[in-house]
Image 1 (cartoon, rainbow, N blue to C red):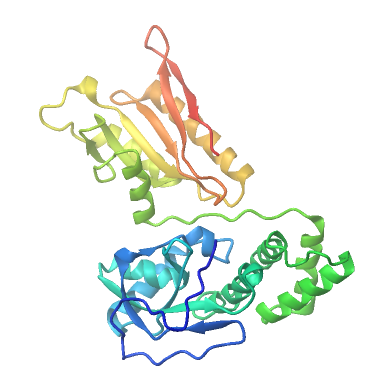
Image 2 (tube, one colour):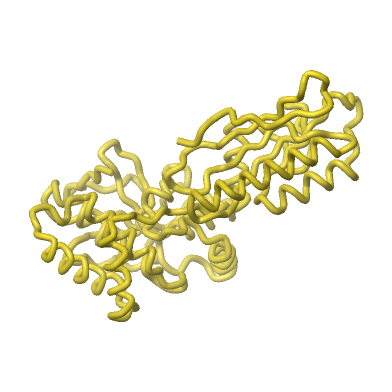
Length: 342
């Protein structure tokens, strides 16, 4: 990401929120006054800017929303502006998501700019993000989060020109600065994993709004477990376990909408496995497809015609889609994968 450095005489065109104090500059960052920034002007980029392996914690999101609703926002979020003038969230992803959930129009925010030479800004920014996002009441960042940090710094060129010993020494220094809660032995474990050279994958955690967005991408507009007239199907959007239960419930108990022919009814499923690595995700998908295959051969009313597996890992950017293809005699069939994850 290219961060545009604001000049001293520049300021965002928003109302200043005088309810929050000015934030002091640090050795690597300086801040604007607190502004009330319209939610619609901010681009999320959660996975890109998040420093944790788990990019969203649904439980923490619920706690933050409840706290904001009852007590207000304690700390403004941190925003930046990229070279194209796009405003993005640097810190405060759960606070920003909570404001959206509460349907608020704007959110108090500071704009950050980074100190340093242009070719060093990305590295300086990553150090800032590690410090800024390691805060209470969020649970302490994990050893995997620390591994992710080191690999990110390597990609940004922080260790260019260093010998291996110098690189490892700098890695330990970065960890001790950003992960003060880690003991020497745990830092040693992180270093062992880093030296193996295999970067751990970041994984997604879904809340209802995330799933809804994936459905909208493919033009499903009905509420989950209801009939979608655009696609002539019952639409399910949930985690994998709840999806299986919903399929069974719809087949047994749900009434066909008035005016809809039985032949025009099938079931389409959007789901995520909740897995934290590709192997586990692939196994869960295979098991689910097998279960739906059995269901299609035995259910008396409706068949599952499409399954959309939403991305489990940040590195995956689209759904894996499976479509039911009946046999020539119409009595059996199988699922074919239509689109590979990228």
